[in-house]
Image 1: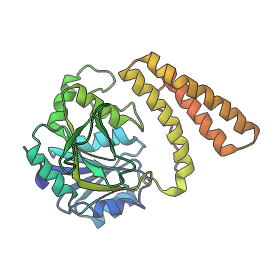
Image 2 (image 1 turned 180 degrees about the vertical axis):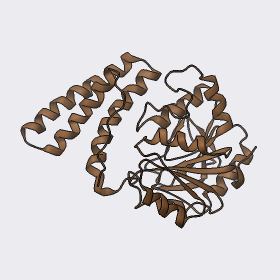
Image 3 (image 1 turned 90 degrees about the vertical axis):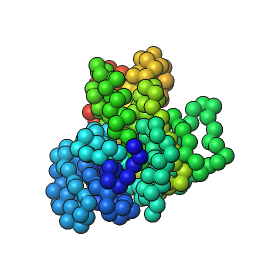
Length: 303
């Protein structure tokens, strides 16, 4: 079965995203249902979206679930067979949806289809080590993973994979592993899909503009930066431990942990408070992952 506007929905996870979400929504066809998962209890934001856009339903989580858990909630609430996950700082081209639909008519076995980022300097996909993109660049091509800011899921295919994973304590019956708060949850999902025989495709004719790290209002950039540094280290350790083993996670992360401590002490001595906090968070992220703590750190985004 191929994609149509009747069996496709869009899920967007937001938090302090009022400044960018409207550009994203306006770029999506008005006849496609959009579910926004707002990671707070911001009723004003919900009321504004649902009043302004007839095709938008905003769900308030009342707490910061993170990207993976927020997307899981949106996917489970969707009654469509196909779900396009977007970050709020992504803007579709006028024919992006049409090109994804056309691609689905020629590819019968896709688990994920992804549009392609227009910024060639930062491709939103990874190939196998020996993989090469076909010279016929306008044709869809297989990849081993895609970035999570724009990915279209075939729910039927992924549900089969989740069923095959039953009993896996990490994934716990979810699309995204909710142990990740941010970073690498999409790489984890793609790795599981490939491992279970699924296929991931990039559709070059379906283009998107990703504004890049603009999903949260700029006034919170210091708190977001601290969160990114903590969670990147935590998620990297957890990802390696899950898929390769503890030894790999430790040997790759420990030198960076020691360097973070040294840099923390240096910036403490010269009284550089911003850098001190960044390297403290890097060291803290590794330490918490090492001893098996959850990804508990949350940025302070209170007004």
